[in-house]
Image (cartoon, rainbow, N blue to C red; front, side, top):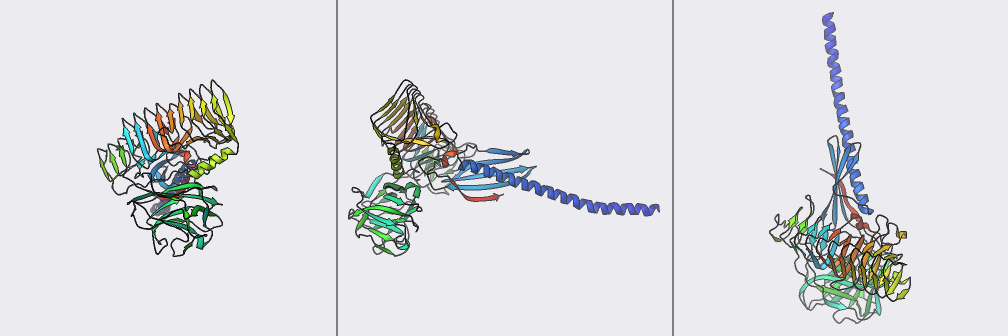
Amino acid sequence: MLIAIIFFLFISLAIIAGLVSPTIREFKIVADTVRSKQSFILSESGIEDAYYRLKNAKPIDSPTSLTLNDNTATTVITDSGYNEKTITSLGDVSLRQRKSELILGTGDGFSFNYGMQIGNGGLEMSNAATINGSVYVNGDIMGNNSPNITGSAIAADRTTEVINQINDTGTPTDTIQFGTTTSTQDAAQSFTVTTSDVATQVAVYIKKSGTPGKIHVRITTNASGKPAISSLTTGTILATNVTTSYGWATTVLSGSVTLIPGTTYWLVLDTGVSSSYYIWGANNAGYANGLGKIGQYGTTTWNNTSPSGLDAFFKIYLGGVNSTINHVTIGQNGIGIASAHNVTETTVAGNLYCQTGSDNNKSCDTSQGDPPPLNFPISEAQIQEWKDEALLGGTQTGNINLTNSETLTVGPQKIVGNLNMSNNTILTVTGTLWITGNINLSNNAIVRLASAYGSGSGMIISDGTVSTSNSATFNGSGTSGSYFMMLTTSTAAGAITIDNSAGTVILVAPYGKINFSNTASAKAVIAKTVSMSNFSSLIYESGLVNQNFVSGPSGGWNIKTWQEIE
């Protein structure tokens, strides 16, 4: 009996062990699965938090952490290419890790995708000048005496502003309307060039009705008196860069296509078909070396304009040389790329893309070609629209002179004269201001937006030069996410001069030069040329990529891919 009992116990224990072991194993598998799912949800939460902040003008650091019940998601935001950001988030729950990746591209609209976006005049940095953000320059980036760019630095092939062909005589006496039907979907203008050089930019004098789609700008060869069905080079004009009033819209062309004298080419504006449409300004026989057509790109369906013999208003720019980055420290903590045709004496935290280089901290990665030039996010048409908005408040003739703690509230309005402020004076802007003369601020003078702007942003437009010194500042409304934009149409070498503090300001001088010196600062910059010296700085805030100007459109980041990665 004892032996039977012992055998029974052993058999029972074996059966119990056989049952318990798989059960424990299943419990462990289930627990691991739950932790893995929690880790995935945590990584997705990190992605969503970063994307929300980028889209909605909220500040965010990189890397940053998101913690839930003592578990953490670590999120990193990097500039992964031209006009592209990559967000990666690693969720960790009890060492069970899942990783998600979101790749963003720039959306249509008015946005600041870089701390500085500079034209063919290039960027000069000296004496410990710093840019806390990324830079895109259609020209050279030249440094001296320890300048630093904490993000990425991209120097595109420099375009020289040489207009080889143009038709802009007077105001348009006729129009070429396109975009409403298949047979009138697109418009074209033939031309020839006088020198052999690379086609770099195109400008067209255009307006819109309604909300049409973007315009694909193409240059084609000639096919029996019509545009060919394939493109030599292309560009893009966003609908948001065209207004309901005539204005010049410019696009940079892709690639390095050389045009040959004596050859007929076609400038094609290609858009979709809708109830909205574009109107291209034209005149009758205003351009001797070509003519306008209406039809559909990619087909042989092209007809004469109505009336026939019209020539569209356009400009063709030729020229260009290779870009250079010299003597700059770029990136930090392994993040931040440098890209240019030639890079010398430069320290790069991330990848270094160049075709030639010397005295750098790493060798050139030649796998990528030279970066393409980038269009400014603000067009002449938009500037004119803002000026028209200022006119709605009337016109005041005479200078505005404020001194010794005086205050003034004004806007919207056009001021035919100068704006001079000094010694603790305050100007409160309640609507867009257009100053036809110069702006001079000194000695703690403050220009600010009215509190009614809330988280929106506003501006002053000047046709003259802008100068600030001795702690003069531009400020938003006081609400987070509100910025002041100071824009000048001046072509001067000192279009904007910032000496010492400048505040929560976006500085724009698309045709001139901005000079920073002596601890001067700004939040974002667009200019033809920029010079920084003597500890001056730019502190870019990622929310500016989706900045909302009360009187203009805004852009932002759009999702390209969203996936889990190894």
